[in-house]
Image 1 (cartoon, helix red, strand yellow):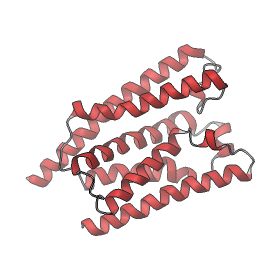
Image 2 (cartoon, one colour; image 1 turned 90 degrees about the vertical axis):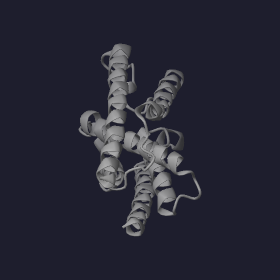
Image 3 (tube, rainbow, N blue to C red; image 1 turned 180 degrees about the horizontal axis):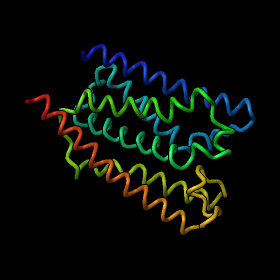
Amino acid sequence: MKEPWNALRGVVALLAVGAVCLQAWHLMQIDRFALSQFISFFTIQSNLIAATVLAIEAAGGFNVPSARRDALRGAVVLYLTVTAVVYAVLLSRLPIVKEIVHPWADPVLHYVVPLFALVDWVVMPPPSKPSFRRALLWIIYPLGYLTFSLTRGALTGWYPYPFLNPNSPGGWTAVAIVSSILILFGIALIWVIVWIAKWRCAKIDA
C-alpha cells in the first residue's frame, strides 16, 4: 500500500502547486496580483509547505530522518486544518474574498489539500508517535506569521485578512480576541493530531 499511497501524495503535491499557480494567474488576469502580498497569505504558505512535505514523502524521504518528517507532517496537518476552518468560518462568505478566488483553485487550496493531509495522517500514522509537548513547537510558525502580519500591517497599512486588520470594526480588541481564539484552537488541534497518531499506531500494533 505504501508505494501507491506515495504516488497519491505526489499527485496531491502537484495539485497544490498547480492550484497556487492558478490562483496567481487568476489574480493577474483581474489585475489584483502583487507578489509580496500573494505570498503573505497563510493559505498560500501552508499549501506550499504541504506540497513540499508531501513531495518528500512521495520520493521516499530524501534521507530526512523519520522523526523529523513525522513532525513536519503533523505541522502540515495543523496548518492546513487551521486554513480550512478559518476560511470556512470567517472568510468564505465575504464578497471581497469571492471577488478574488479562482473557482477551481479555491476548493483545492482550502478543502481538498487540507482534507488529504488529515487522511494521510490517519492512513499512514507516524511511527515516531510525537508527544504533545514536542508537538507544541508546531505553533511557532503560526505565531511568527501572526506577529509578522501585524507588524507589517502597522507599517504598510495592508493586512492579509480582515480579522487581522485593526482598522476594521472592533479595532485592536477584535484582533486580539480573534487571534487568541485561533491560538487556543491551534493548541487544541495539536492535542487532537497527536492523539490521532497514538490511537492509529495502537490500532496497527494491536
